[in-house]
Length: 102
Image (cartoon, rainbow, N blue to C red; front, side, top):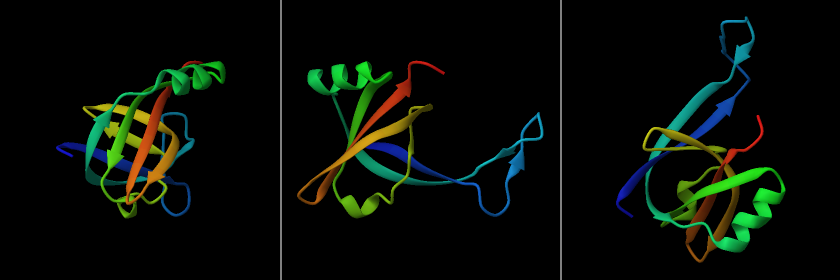
């Protein structure tokens, strides 16, 4: 667990910032956590691809309590959406994807 990731949550309640078109953007809150970087399995990759998602990376946190339902993860300047989480004992695996179709 030697890589740092940012777990990001979005909130539309409270103060939001308007974008260039006047639409409200969510307020973001992030926390830094140490994680292990893992590969996405072949079966998991093909099942998600059929649903229009491209799982790219999996993170493993040593303690599931370090995760509080955040739906965005940032690693090395790249943002990912959380596809699913899987708890194994005290550890938590977070599978992330980028959208194929925007």
